Length: 150
Image (cartoon, rainbow, N blue to C red; front, side):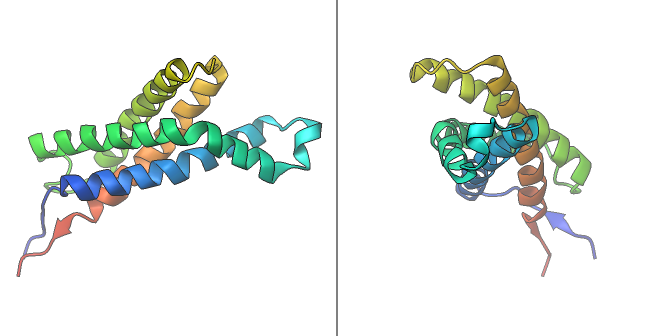
């Protein structure tokens, strides 16, 4: 008895990946800022810094989540390379590349539309966060899209 995998539905994929980006990217961006080192005046107000990071990054993360879900759905539906049979490494790589691209592009676009001059450091951090969230989310979502034959 072999396991067959089907491609996930477009709506489910968009909802799951967008939600994971909206929740995951701000937390990872805050983590990167904390790793770099928060200034002394902000260290005691970490919850305020976290809420500020969420306020600044949620729209770009929303746009990136929609973009990566559309890219992944199109790729998975055009080829069975990722899901027939399921390969964690391929899905992880697909998510990392498309997540980094989507988050960098959406952060840059959001910065231009909202007239927020994001620094190159900020866009690099968004790229790293998009890579991590995209890789994990894509691998998990595509793994859960399997169907066992009756």
